[in-house]
Image (cartoon, rainbow, N blue to C red; front, side):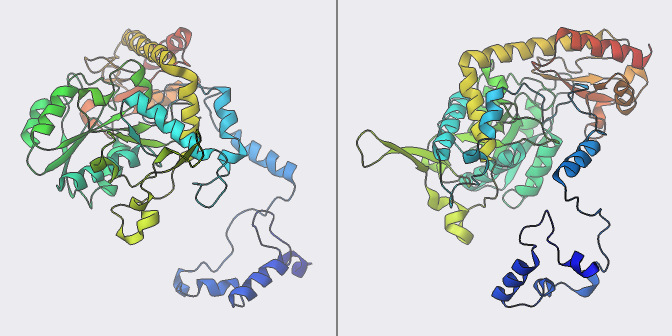
Length: 468
């Protein structure tokens, strides 16, 4: 029986049928799969079986097992969610889910060695929609996420200017800052932070002036910034940078561009952000896809590491084809001689975001943006009525997100969020660790999914929790 068990194929592992496995080993000239790992020292190898349950061979039993595990989670279907900070709960139109699950898109990885089935055109249409939204003509295929996109713009700016120092606004996402420091350090080993005004949350212009020098290649900032504050002095910031020969990269929430000016209109050289709010469901913090946009100029295009899709007339009159632009500049083509390197991209999420933008149109994006502005304003005013709560913390206009301070309640954000769970509410993102200067503050997010009643429910629950 034991020998028979060893000879069985594993239900989840391809090519685990014993006969097929033996054939594969024979083909590559080894006797055992262990020979593949011969270079790994013995002291690094685990000498016992992994402590994992046996495979469940019945599809029904496996589904039931996974469902039971998932039922232990607290999810946003059952709880009211006010978390944001980089992955937001927006409405996902049914058509977006339908397109995302189509086999020709879902199963076609990158597209180089597989049948296209219209994916190149879908990528071109997506890039065209982003281009119209940010009012820039060159848009890349979706990178892994916003963090990778903004770090890539820093690297691009360094190559374009030949400089090795980058300025980064302190008012950006800590996760994106971490990625910039990790990914861009070889291009810009000197990264200096620019402060924000503690009263308004806006970029500190005086601090920017003091740190601008001839070795600065770029400033990366976000608008709205991580605190939801809308930066109103973009043109002044861009002019300061350009006067020193430096570039400006602005990270944006694409949904804000239905009501706010795109970065190109106030002098930005790069616009970047994430497509997640545009028809991509949340998934354990995922569902992300970063975009980069620039002017359609050779000096910018030559520095893109990611794929770019364009349209060209074919040999047949009236026919058009969709293909890659300047493929030779990518690491796929240039290999070790490439200026930068490219890994897995989120093309699928870009296609879905294109569907979302086409579905919404300019008027839809405008109406959505106006609704998010109104909800954020109402929510901040409502929460500020709770004794001991200051909302918003910054005296500025906010889009979708705003910072709430709880110092007056004598409770920590962690204590408040834990208590809110008893009301089936996910509270705001705790900022006390990443931004200790704010005291016990949290970032709250409201979207089109939140009704007036939902916001009122949060305020009532918060009043009950703080007990004041």
